[in-house]
Amino acid sequence: MPVTGDNTEHTTEINTQAVTWLVRLTSGDITSDELAAFERWRSADSRHEAALADARGLWVSMGMSLENYYQPDALSGISPHEQARRRLWRWQIMLPTAGLLLFSAIMTQNWLSRWQYDHYTSSGEQRMLALDDGSRMWLDADSAADVRVNSGQRFVRLARGEAFFDVVHNPVQPFIVDAGVGEVKVLGTAFGVQRDGDGMVVTVERGRVELSRRDHPDMQLNANQQAELHGGQDSAKITSVNAGQVLSWHQGQLVFEEQPLGTILATLKRYDKRVIVFNSERLAAVKLNAIIDINHLDDWYDGLQQSLPVNISRVGPVVWLRERK
Image (cartoon, rainbow, N blue to C red; front, side, top):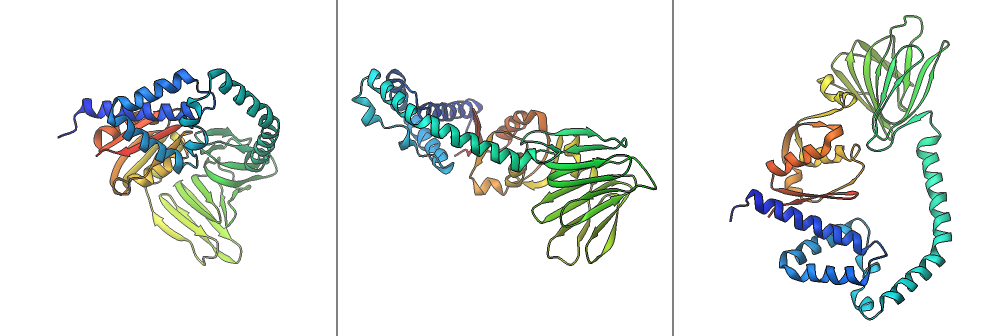
């Protein structure tokens, strides 16, 4: 039977209901009335049970065990008052210690990943900075940098992530970007630098840049050229690219040409604050052309659901993509 738009919409609704119930079941404060409503929904349609099984698989793949939260046999014989008393007792015992550990972990993680740097962005966040010399710097999602731009120096250390620079020309004071494995030096141009572990990628949109690393000769890059450099490599890999397309993220767009869906979704994880779950190897290999507005990702998800056999459920912090059978 062909899949119609109505069937697709209904299947997506069932998947959303299943994930919603799962979120409620794992919340820790579900009532006996809600539990009864869940059991009625579960038994009302065989598709509900199948969707719940898929949602449970999603939960387990994210490292969460449903049985740790929801035990229907144990709950069914306990009065609502006793359920509430047991939850209160459990939280009274666990909350002080768990809260202290969580606060300490969050503070440590935030300091290590963000607060030790002059400027940083979180997942799904971008920022434009006007520098003291008149240059501009864009930090992409999940990036961090230290900036020393004043009358005596023009220096940026990109600690992680990606940045785009539109540099004001100054013939006597170069603008330098340190990305770990190498440095980029310019007098005035527009270019992007990406740092990932011990590697870096430099893409030139306008003008010319000089890429250097210790004990290696300097390299010159011109507009629409890209250099990829990794620690342990003797030389950089230089290719010709459409720099405007590669660096379009700083204008709020992501442009893909003949890219696998899996690669596109992996990229979107930087820009979508939700958890993206997708496990279809067949569809992951399908190549697409796409122009995605970073600020309206759900519009693209809606279009994807219409063009490919995939159902997409968006519930709370989860975007769940399932291959349509």
